[in-house]
Amino acid sequence: MIEALLAGDVRALARAISLVEEQAERAAPLLAEAYPHSGRAAIVGLTGSPGTGKSTLVDRLIAGYRREDRRVGVVAVDPSSAFSGGAVLGDRVRMQAHATDPAVFIRSMATRGQLGGLARAANDAVDLIDAAGYDPILIETVGVGQDEIDIVRTADVVVVVLVPGMGDDIQAIKAGILEIADLFVINKSDREGADRLAADLEAMLALAPGDAPRPAILRTVAVRDEGIDGLREAVVSFLHSRGLARRQARRRERAEMRLRALVSERVLGRLFDPDAPGSDGLAHLVSEVAERRLDPYRAAEQLLARMEAR
Amino acid sequence: MIEALLAGDVRALARAISLVEEQAERAAPLLAEAYPHSGRAAIVGLTGSPGTGKSTLVDRLIAGYRREDRRVGVVAVDPSSAFSGGAVLGDRVRMQAHATDPAVFIRSMATRGQLGGLARAANDAVDLIDAAGYDPILIETVGVGQDEIDIVRTADVVVVVLVPGMGDDIQAIKAGILEIADLFVINKSDREGADRLAADLEAMLALAPGDAPRPAILRTVAVRDEGIDGLREAVVSFLHSRGLARRQARRRERAEMRLRALVSERVLGRLFDPDAPGSDGLAHLVSEVAERRLDPYRAAEQLLARMEAR
Image 1 (cartoon, rainbow over the protein chains, first blue to last red):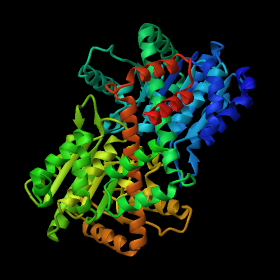
Image 2 (image 1 turned 90 degrees about the horizontal axis):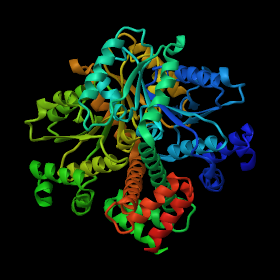
Image 3 (image 1 turned 90 degrees about the vertical axis):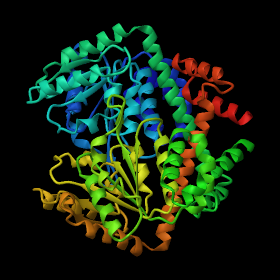
Image 4 (image 1 turned 60 degrees about the horizontal axis):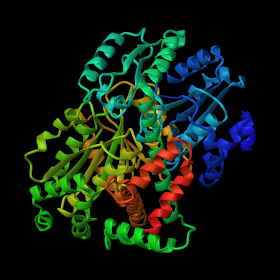
């Protein structure tokens, strides 16, 4: 499978991602083989609230990259719900124009499941798509949760998408999102309020601590394909101007984040696996804490000591 | 300090929470003493998107509980931003009416910092407030991220606040939030669209898997104090009708979640502490991963093996 994947076989790639997504323990041998072949693609993260038109923007970016004859990978991370039963499908439909183009690989992932598990699976998927020779790879997430933010924040370039007139409570929307932007896009910029939004952004950026270069603010109307070439150029120019040192720093951050997530997942998986030996002892410990006979800190120390004694 | 806290001293309580919030390692001895005295308060979680009027609702709930002569604790978890420099203060001002009432203890916490760290600090704060004799304790969060959802989901009763007319993209807002509701509140229910929202909710709940009792849908207009008594009654009736078994199950869930968070924090803290012995080795490992000479899975295994060998 890995050989087919490295040769660019789309079905092998899709199957590898499914394995990685469904069973964490299958990911290790696959990644071990694919990982040395990854690291070549430019990773472009796009995030923004629901309704900002990110999917249309991604659709137009894909079309632009195709005109340059590049093979494009997309990982779209969707909010999901036990009620709706999966990813929000409406948005994805907008990208279907490219579904029959073998040089475009699109993968949706749902935000269901364990904390941290999604970030692991999404990063693994990016590496597999990278190893299969796609470049650039776009990661699209809804910027609502820490999980989603963590997924895009370590991309080579982070694009934050905003729209005019999303209400005056921009304060709440921006928490944690504005900080990670390398580029801002005001989409639907033909709407009223685009100038004010740009001015608000400028004002906010002027208050930013540190002397890091200020992110550019671009305007697009994705449904009319306006400003998309400018966005692609801004991405390229950001990646060039940033220099090797900052690129490497970002990749080290990404590596560290992945290590943290994997270590945490492994440790918790071992400790809290109901089928593992000693899980009776854990259930007892949880009850002791729930019934206030033991405090959580002591219980955590006991668990760690037990793990280290194994 | 703990003795003063257990005797209900407000300043000792405030100081204890600050210690727990700022330095995780100070939390252990404090919690060890306070924890056996906690577990008595009813914990009411409230969550909803920005703009749903949660803070006004909490303000009116406090007033109601005060009429019953109960001592009320509040932990308000705010989105924060490196730009705005902290918690969103506007909302908090609405609760200031109770600031001079010694029987009301309100604590704001910002969502800054490490993943998981906020959940730990918020839960520790609840236990300290509980040990100081406040009952009920309200936990208010903005329902945008997994972190915030995890904080309220294990409360004894989870209230999800919605408002009519927040746009048609309710699909995206609800991801992960609707599932945790024990009670729904449609606030600002004098606005157009309240009936439709209630009907949409009913329809969605009808699709819910399982045979768990369906959450009640209440209507309030918090600014006019309408429906607040009904909400308080619904909380009481939910807690009574649920029975001891489900209450205990929820508390075990909460205990397990805390254990997971603490174990993860401890393990990562030890491994990634830049001042710890062996951190040079870690930095080297991160570089190896960033430069694709080692894949993240093998690196995680090496880290874990190293930790266990210590």
